[in-house]
Amino acid sequence: MKTKVLYILLFAMGVSGAVNAQLNNYKYIIVPKKFEAYKTVNKYQTSTLVKYYFEQNGFNAVYDDALPSDLANERCLGLVADIEDSSSLFATKLNITLKDCNNVEVFRSMEGKSRIKEFNESYKDAIQKAFVSFSGMNYSYVPKTKVKVQDEAPVTISFKDDVKTVEEEPAKYVVEQKSTMDEQVYKDIEPKSSNITRAVVEKTELPDPSNVLYAQAIANGYQLVDSSPKVVLKLEETSMDNVFMTSYNGNNALVFKKNDKWILEYSDNGEKIQKELNIKF
Image (cartoon, rainbow, N blue to C red; front, side, top):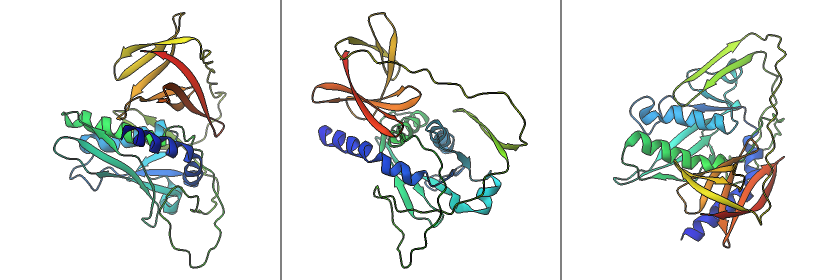
């Protein structure tokens, strides 16, 4: 069963390029302050967590009561996020879904599952695991011209690039956002001249597969240390055995076991790359 789940995960990563191309057509992710599954605003910090993890994966997430002017005038620029909660008495289980302006579902995450007893921590754990589906997408908004298609029924995403949007004029304002686990701030500000340049992410070279990386236990996972000793990667546990989330050269990545070998999978300019690691636990 675990092998089947891992195969499904790896298959999903293999087609993530097509999914990414479709999501690139949307400029915003709209996060409700209160999801339909819950009776109160931001219950278990669900809204805060969903907005935070979308922004951590490169998406432009906004709350439903703080829409920028272009999105307020054209709701089809954004996808509405939702949580489908199928929790039981003993486990928190949920999926993250995205629906377009016609209420058609265009994306559904893998199930995030947690058995932590404390509700806030359990929902945080489950949401984080569901967001593995967005890992490594390298989202970048690309407006497209809508092509008129007659008698075409709306299509729910099954990893197909069928959604089209209207090309829009560039935004005439600058957005300032603050994104932390505890606070989300959004406001428009006037453009100002600046000499600030984008920081360059320093490239990390992986050791030769013949060199051993030693796994040291840390909170929620492991850190991999070479013989220097130097920390090469930090691995965060997921709901699946031998599958870890990590960050490599500024992008989300996965480390998983395949055919008794440890593999690092990451995206480089839209291309999926796998490298073998020699990990000793």
